[in-house]
Length: 87
Image (tube, rainbow, N blue to C red; front, side, top):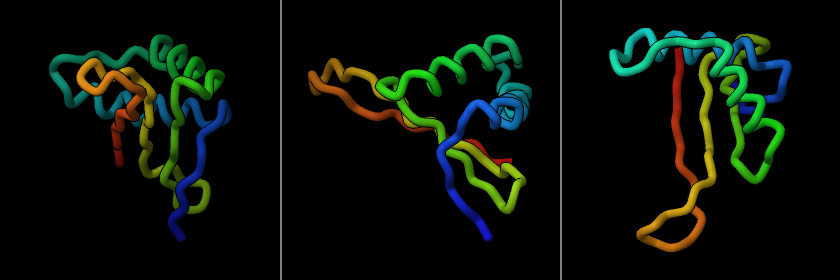
């Protein structure tokens, strides 16, 4: 059964693996576990910044989504940006 759950610090290594896979495919980015770990922890520790979600089958992490709060200069208000990655 597939589930979507909020991520926590226990899931950081799984999220770093997904980001490593993505950044290996993208020529503009380089995987950097320390950097990714720091930013994932920052998001997890600051709910006003956003939310990290995981797509799971049992205990296996299949994908992740970032929901990051930012300010839209065009709208003049808070908006949510999304990013999805699945393996």
